[in-house]
Length: 57
Image (cartoon, rainbow, N blue to C red; front, side):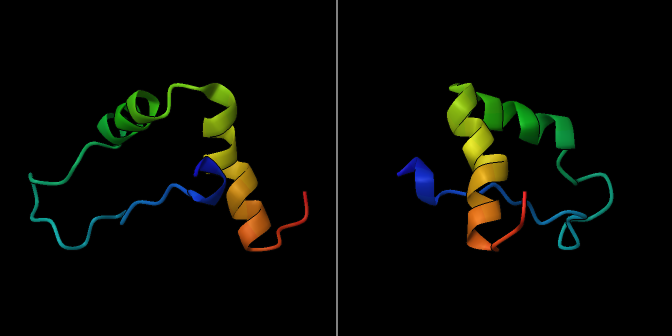
């Protein structure tokens, strides 16, 4: 259910060794591939976290 999904990373990737850290652009490309629908992506990146943490818009 997309209305229960939020996006997160473990940035700054403390468990990775130097030279073995993921590229942030690659992670964003994965997000765009996994969630091609813009309105769902907006919900995952902004709307759902705002609702979860009771952020005021």
